[in-house]
Image (cartoon, rainbow, N blue to C red; front, side, top):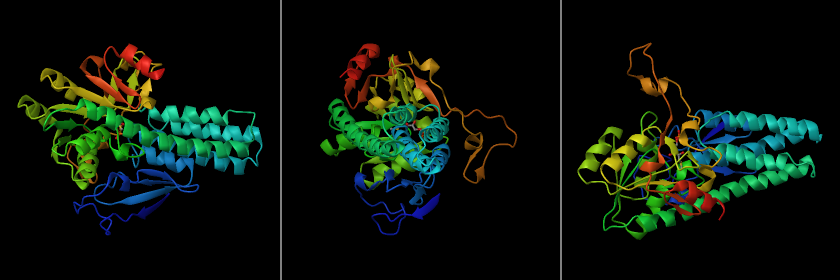
Length: 372
Ligand code: MRU
C-alpha cells in the first residue's frame, strides 16, 4: 500500500494553518481507475497523507487499522474493495466462473471480518454479492457491474448525507443553537459532507450563529482530531471539550441539541454508536435536551429486534493505556476497550435518515421509511 503526501488548499499539506476551506475538498475515499485512494485518518490532523490501495487485502488492512473509519465510509470502502477483488479474481481465474466466484467470496469474507459493528459494511458486501453470485453473466461482465455498483454506493452516500443535512436542519431551530456532537460523523466518516456533521453543515448554512461543542472522544480522539479539524477549517464556530465535560455544559443550559451518528440501528430504534454516546444520551435526557441520531438508511438493520444483539467490537488494550508512542498506564494492567455502546430508543428524540425523519415508536416509523 503506497502512502502519498497530499497537498491541502494551503499548499503545504499541513492542517496546522486554520484556513477556511470547503467540505468538498475533503477526499475521504475515491476510486481512481483500479485504485482505492483514501486519506489516512490515523495521521490527521497533523499530516494529510493518502493511501493507495491496489488489492482488497490492503483495503481490509486500512479498515482494521482505522486509516478509514466511520460506518458509511466503511460501506463505501468495502464496495470498492470488492471491485478490486473482482478485477484480481478475473485475472487469477483466467475467467473460469467457479474459480472466479471462490476468489471473490473469500474476499467478501475477509472484508466482513474486519470490523463487526457498523452495519453499512455487511450491507455493501451484500449489495456486491447480489452481483458476483449471478450465473447469467460472465466474470468479465460481473467485474464491470461491480465497479459500477461500487461507484453508485459512493454517489448514493454523498446524496444521502445532503438529504440528512436538510431534514436535520429543519429540526434545529433557535436564534443561536449550540450542538454537542460525539466522535466524528463527518465528511471523513462518509463519502463526503457527513451525517451528524451534515446536519451541522446544513444548519450553519441557514444560521451562521450556530455553535458546536465537539467531544474529544476517547480513546482514539475522533472528536479532537477529526471533527475539530473538519469544522474549524470551514469556519464553523467550534469548541473542543473532553468527554467528561458534557454534563457540566448541559446542566448550565449551554447545549441546546445533541446530534450524533450511528453504526447500527435496530428495528426498535436502539442505536449503536461510538463508546460514550450512551452516556451523552442519558445526560441529554436528564437535562431535557433533544438527542438526534443522523444516519443513512444503510445503517438500519431491521433484521435485529433490539440493540442487545448488536455485535460490539472490542479493540486493542493499547488504545486505552496510551496514545501513539505515549503510555500512561502501569504495565500489565487489565483493560477493557469496547469501541461502541448502545443508546436505547427511549433516549432518542428522532432518527434523521436520508428518507426522512423517524419519530417514536421507531418500530413503526422505520418500517414505514424502509418501504418508502
Ligand atoms: O470507530 P469509528 O471511528 O469507526 O466509529 C465511528 C462512529 O462511531 C461514528 O459515529 C459512526 O460510524 C457514524 S459515522 C457517519
